[in-house]
Length: 315
Image 1 (cartoon, rainbow, N blue to C red):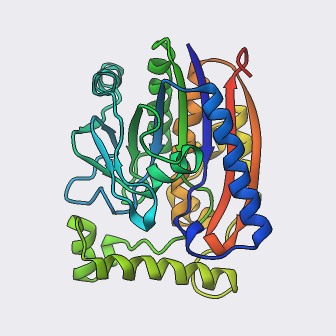
Image 2: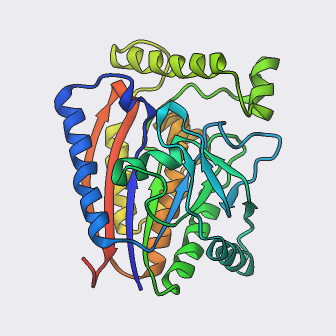
């Protein structure tokens, strides 16, 4: 058995809004080097914790946690497309373990996932199908959200289960850090927007493009210091990354949802994926943790952080 971890911010703006060339080169170069490490490790299983951005999960049925038994990348923003190679028997075994240990998760035989799940595997390996993958969705976008305490317990139990497989496992947390994308709230949304949040599957190409363009323009305004989006918070991002590496969950557990929004924006709730991934890693045993990269990239509306870890004997 070997367990490794990789946590990274994702941003669909990377291929659509220009950042300073030296910054873009750093980010892509970092993912390229990490991709080489992943290929050398040759994982037998990827477990990905990710949010959705009202592309595959909606308020008509929005569980706090969902394990994909079968899953398809929808290819939004041109990032990844097609079926994941989900080992169904293992995915069901994971669900059974979670239920047996009092973590209630939903399961899906037709999970549709967006760039949150797809971007990191594509940047690392070029495809969503390179390795067998179990996708685990954490609701980070549709309040009321699962508590950080429950997210940590989800990750802890996934880590316990993964440690017993006798396989090379790579645990991925995809999301965060500080960013404030234009995600509407159902409580004050006009009727047509509320309907999209409830059952917005299969939007027209026009609606899809309009939504993506709005996100691009928000990022451009943020880079110019304009608009209403909350600025990125690099000091908080770096502190959070250090806390996760140390296994210090107390600060994020003590941060309420309203406070987290004020600190890191509505997209900051995606740090739940880091909490789950690090809880899984720490449950699997002591590890050597590595701070790989951080840069606040306003053009991509991303506190872009990347970190890795390996069990101490593997590093």
